[in-house]
Image 1 (tube, rainbow, N blue to C red):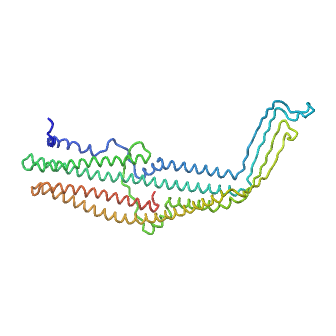
Image 2 (image 1 turned 30 degrees about the vertical axis):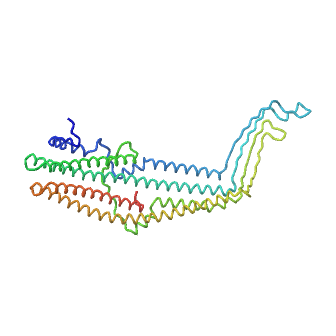
Image 3 (image 1 turned 90 degrees about the vertical axis):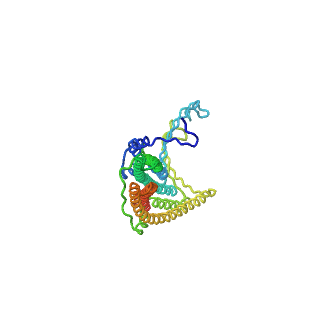
Length: 434
């Protein structure tokens, strides 16, 4: 029979208690089991398998290819050619059919060796290609740094979610014990239905929080597995321990000397300045030398069977319609942009160090207070529970103490994660991680 509108369907309390008593371990253990790895292993796997690092390695190969292309313009070049010509008939000297001046079957072959003797703009392109390769390598180091930081944050997220889950499970277990006690008192004729319903509601709330914490933990584990290049979620095997924080002066100095993103920005600015500085080389002449041996079969009146020729080709661009002027302006603008970006990054790095250093100090203070609050909340819960069992108070005080204890322990877990994140931020801001 369906309940009337406004009436809630209620499960018998004894049956509900049996179901709740049978479920605690099933909700607290993730399923299926997954691989557990250490913090260092998570970072190592991520650097070896992540998409970002693999793409960055290909960018280095691309820069190496561009360097080879730029270098080729300054090195000798050798080209071989072959031509076979078929005419409808031999060509004869006018008035003398017996004398053939052009055979109907002709073979011509030559090789052309070109030696760049004076090519200032190509030499500059070679040098610029080397700068580009160095920038690509520095950019790869920055990509690896950011990838390692992402993996570290994912790992710390798992550690924090586990801590929150532990606090939620303990709160659920405490609420279950209180519910069983309230139900037992009511069935023994000492308690009342109101206390039992309140305890049941608090148990259901904590049970829901356990499921939410489990879902959040699984999301973090999946995120770590994806970042580390695995086809399955990965679990944390330890709580990482970071080295002590450096002093403020050391942190500011190390940020400019050790961070890979700053080094990459410095190389980009230097490379752009180098390109801009070499713009005047476009106005210099170029001198090429060529040597060409050939074979003509059969020989003709103007072409012997074998021979060679050498040439010197001097080229000076007198007017190009403003191409070189436009290129110089573009290079100057790129150089100034790179310089401004470097200055902005240096200011940002110094700001990150100050923020991370200050936040770490405040996070440590907040953690100390959160732990103290959790201890006092646990003590208050024990006192309220003893008073309720002695019949001195109702269970409203117990439920309120349970909620406060649960929230305080969760806040302590969040504060612990904030400290770990702050240490990671400070290490990454100063270039000490990874």
